[in-house]
Image: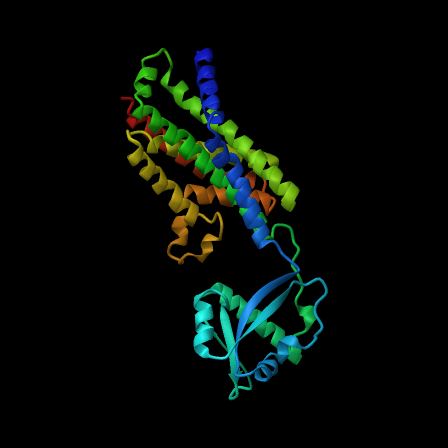
Amino acid sequence: MNNAFLNLINMQIKEFFREPETLFWAVLFPVALAGILGLAFMQQDQTKRSVGVLAASPAASAALLKPWTAPVAKAQGSREAAFNFKLYPARALAIQAIQRGEITLFLEPAAKIGGPCYHFDTKNPEAQLTYLLLERERLRQSGYLNAECVQPLVAPGTRYIDFLIPGLIAMGILNSSIWGIGWALIERRMKKLLRRMVATPMKRYQFFLSFFITRLGLSLFEFLVLFTFAALVFHVKMQGSLAAFALVFLCGNLAFGGVALLMASRADNTQVGNGLLNAITIPMMIMSGIFFSYQNFPAWLIPVVKYLPLTVLADAFRKIFIEGAGLFDVAAPCVILVAIGAGCFALGQKIFKWY
């Protein structure tokens, strides 16, 4: 019995490392994603923003831009915005620049209000931020804003990369289980390998357990690579209990291992399997707050999103990494994840098609 079980695990590990593409998507892709997004959102000394200026002449432009070109006291160590002003002699040219993505807004003199008039898409977050930064500088120049009132926040866990890494760890467990277990089972069924394996003295529970043990070990390897990279490059730290992390990590693998088994229990070709697995993974990766907070969704949808298994897992990891949570703090998410995994595993094993 032990030899059969160990042989199954050994077989799956060899299959994993024989596929270079699998190594890239499972190990290197999350690291590359963390690096690109971490660098993109890292706090720089200055952020250059292009702003259009609708003025008939350079003299008119200089008068309009006086609040942003005059020297003014700034808070020490604060992150300031730098503006790249572009002159447009006609309104049509400024609108065309927005359409092409060269600028996000433009301003022009407004004699009636004694200041600039801003033109931008109010639903565009980047344009809104540029507008607010421009107004901040104008108020500071006019003396209505004290430079010392704006101070950089340096509390642990407040950076975007601190939010991102726990989400990527959760996403890695999802992909490792759904594709490493679900897709592998569908592929074996399609190649008629399942009917051959079930005819051997192998116990069926050993077969399923070998998949779980293998994916658990590989998920741990993927986590170590990603976390080591994040710690060395971005100084990401785990604020909470290591025991709490280990428990959540195990429960997350249980949950998605059960989901993967259920999804693969009946599909017998790659077309159905690919569509089914993508239908599970893609909505959860978009809705579960991996790359941005799910609080941005409509209020009626948030209670549903909060109980998606990937959301539960990512939120539990963030409690540990950012909030310093311990074992008691993650008890509820672990119960939910184990319930999802056990329910899916029981149903999937019952309806599993070997032939």
